[in-house]
Image (tube, rainbow, N blue to C red):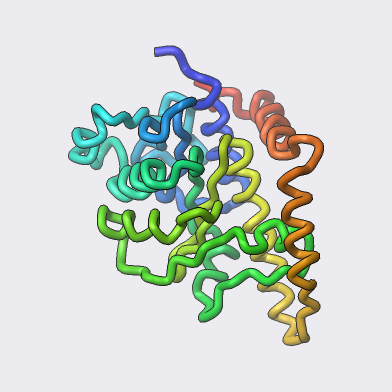
Amino acid sequence: MEITELQKDLAATFRWTARLNMHEGVANHFSACIPGSSTDFYVNKAGVHFSQIKASDLILVTKENINDLKNKPELIDPTAINIHGTIHQKVPHAKCIFHVHSKYATALSTLKNPTLPPIDQNTMIFYNRVSIFNEFGGLGFENESIKMATALGNKQHMLLANHGIITTGQTVAEGFNYLYYFEKAAETYLTALSTNQKLNIVSNEIAEKTAQETNNYPIDLAKMHLDQIKLILDKEEPEYKN
């Protein structure tokens, strides 16, 4: 079967997430719907380290095979197929989903108030665009996944309290770019908290204006970001495309 550009893009984000040490070995999952669908999507094969994932390691889940794949945990992690399958189906705008337990996002998720206040440009990107899932009930099997999809609602991203982060996008580039910047935003916030000084939080108006300006930026920085990542990988780890 021919490997698609979608698979290559998604494989590149796994490799780069490993380089950034935002992964947990063979755990955590990324997925991307095939164009025009909200039920058929690629997700990473179980048991493959993020740093080793190739385009051919991404498994296509469809309406026709999803129930069969749910009975093959050696092929796709059960939490992956439940979380990603449920969110793709119930949240139409979540075409690409990125879920990790990265250092700073996870640390943020453990705070009693895990809201990310607008204290710099990166935190402002996410102003009023992140839902908080406060009902941790164990691993992301079917019932937990339905609760997650409901909690995401019309927001683009979701912080899973006591768990980690989910970012979404219309494209692989967009979803990954948000994942990258959410981790940076969480790092800035937690570093600022560590000073024990009062935070200089900008007004709601400025935070919203900055978020909108980011969304409407005149060039596609997310695509440029992923294109540069792929350019580096093409030279240093070209097997990611296989």
